Length: 231
Ligand code: 13P
Image 1 (cartoon, protein in one colour):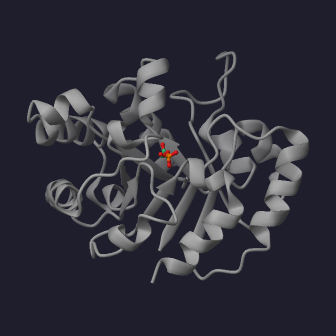
Image 2: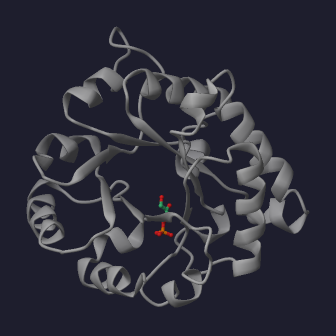
């Protein structure tokens, strides 16, 4: 399974040094993808697979504060999260920008981990399918079929992120079936409050190819239990 660890905006220099040692000492057969902050990518120097949490829509040039896909590549970054709901909300990131980011990544052989997910309001007003379809179809617009299948999709319902609440298995299965209609060959992850307790429930879902973990990525003892319980 793919286990992507989204550190979000956490772990300072010294904390990260001991964190990465602890993470590397966990023995597992899963594909672990560590997505630290940009600064910690520079400090990672690790045998682990590394992902970024974002990428610029542009190539190298006069774009102050941005990090390009070619720069990520030069730091051996193999994956990049794009379209996380926190960036959609706080940075006002649009589906069109996410599409440009995915194109930059694919051009540089970096695997995009595309996050999509509905808000509670959208779920309560029965708009889940429309919202996800729009997010997904604009994100992959004008991308060649052979490239589409390289994209990993992460379904992260916004109301589940950091809340301790997860959808029912039926709700997840329903969404995964919709995603498969658009990108049948893509791997699909679940993200949102996944932890060492609710994994017993989540692992009943056969369609899940892995998990995108936020809070749990920072708690290595609990992460270890999560990994042990996966199968
Ligand atoms: P939590 O696991 O903390 O809910 O975060 C999920 C997430 O946003 C991962 O990208």
